[in-house]
Length: 392
Ligand SMILES: NC(=O)c1ccc[n+]([C@@H]2O[C@H](COP(=O)([O-])OP(=O)(O)OC[C@H]3O[C@@H](n4cnc5c(N)ncnc54)[C@H](O)[C@@H]3O)[C@@H](O)[C@H]2O)c1
Ligand SMILES: [Zn+2]
Ligand SMILES: [Zn+2]
Image (cartoon, rainbow, N blue to C red; front, top):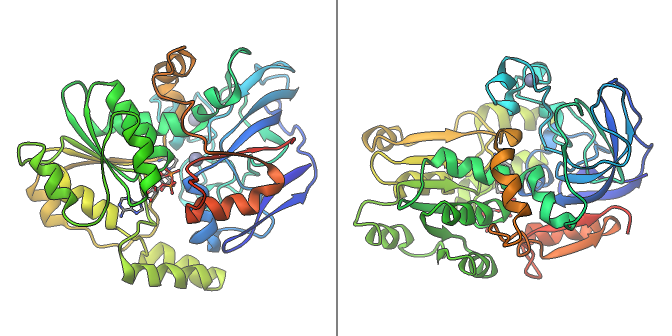
């Protein structure tokens, strides 16, 4: 089959690899009909190289049709399913508490990491990823969500990651009707978090340097700002001088605006594996511009919710401000299935309240993955979300 593989910093290719096969009774194999590229994949592309091996299949946002079902998979050949990006058993201590991204059956203990993720480096179990024509789904008795036949793929696809992640970000930010919410970063996660904030009745401010990303958010009732000048002061003025009740950092560890850390990032990406890993894990090379900005912006007693992914260990945090402003901080990989009953009805709603019809800017054949990654990273051609078609 064809699959997108990691080949080095800023280098992916489309290769012919062996088809996946059933290995456990609760596995299923799906024929992937749509598979998206995520901001998280850009971290593999740019800074997480020391944790990757050449030839790793990447991708974690798939949907498709079951073509082989293990006897304990609870699925049948022909079922149409969307597959959460984190692999969970559904029945361990963590899963019983809906902390699926911390599943104790699939935790990657040798790396001290949480649940295994599709296509996401040695840190998360080196599981073959989903930007491929076929995907082996472990623990398929729990993960995959069976969906109907009527609606097109792009209505359901973002249940694999973007929509539950954004939902969790807003829940963790603790805002609801009548509250104020700022979203830093208007990539796909920020777009959906902003729309969910609006859907739940909050006033939403969105911040991003890229004009077409601001324009998309503005189409969905978000008050938008760029990153130059006194954006935070401006938003404070609009919130009685206090700042928003909740702030979602939807940028993560590659924020623009920290030149020193940028040099460190480049260094890690270029170092031989072992040295790069050590620097990444222990020296800490996060670019914290978006996190610092969230801490500055949120009102006293408010909540900062990180959906952006962070790595590294030693990044200094403004503890004085965090403590003095009495800020609550929540974060983590999304517990996708914990939110499914909330979000599935929204994507199936004929009114499309989350605007799933207005997110994908490019649908491309899988053969064009190298160009797609470059375009998504550089944000050229108005690119906001790319879906790859594995069988085009
Ligand atoms: N927690 C989870 O489960 C989970 C799931 C999916 C994605 N993520 C993470 O969420 C983050 C966003 O993902 P995405 O797919 O939307 O990616 P993306 O790269 O498209 O979005 C990031 C956005 O942040 C903007 N940005 C960069 N620096 C900024 C700054 N200083 N201030 C304001 N905006 C800035 C960029 O212009 C871009 O629009 C990534 O870190 C990704 O790894 C986390
Ligand atoms: Zn993703
Ligand atoms: Zn579990």
